[in-house]
Length: 305
Image (cartoon, rainbow, N blue to C red; front, side):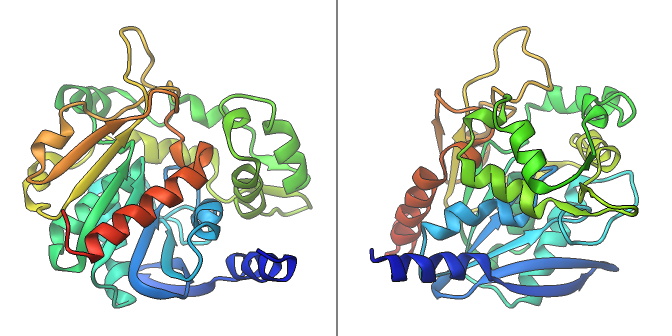
């Protein structure tokens, strides 16, 4: 690719369309990279935002891609806690409906994986397939534990630093620390650049502040996601990080939170484990993920399962 073409491609990924959408009484923002073909929907994890997908988008030139900032994240409005994760999926469906999206390939990471399952279960006619990247759909016994015992006040994420002088300062502070050291630097920079908002008195604060992020995590066991799984009849790909070992903390992001038997609960699902990846698959391997999305998209368009 020529330097001119590379510059044009970079400019394209940096300037997506910004949609402001009223959903369930809340103002949500969704970003769209216009292109050809059936839409690809990218849904981020707790504490992140839509622009974290830019390295993936850049590797899928010419495709129509939509990525929302989920409630209380990025530039979307903030919901009042406590949070029910089933509602996140309903909010996501509101975005899909407002933009008139059909034949969607839904790609969701972590909380985003949970959300696309809810949306697809409630409106299966709008989705042609799902790709779930280490979704936070845990074993039922773990879900009961989370729902009954992990409070927002006790969650360690509340202690994270909230104020920064600049996105570059945040990038420099994170790039040598785990888990960020394993991320593609482009993703880390996008996380910092688009994950901060101007603070009163100067500097920046996180767009998803630690107290709200903790509230989102505390809602992970809410609702009955298991009752919806059988309604998701389109092809589903589950891609997991390494399995959790005895003694691993519920807050350990080096391993997968996903229920190992989850694929068996869907009518048409496959399961794959990436033993060399942590929970942050899209951040560590955006190029690989884009190629995987392109392959799945092509197979679905050809009518394969």
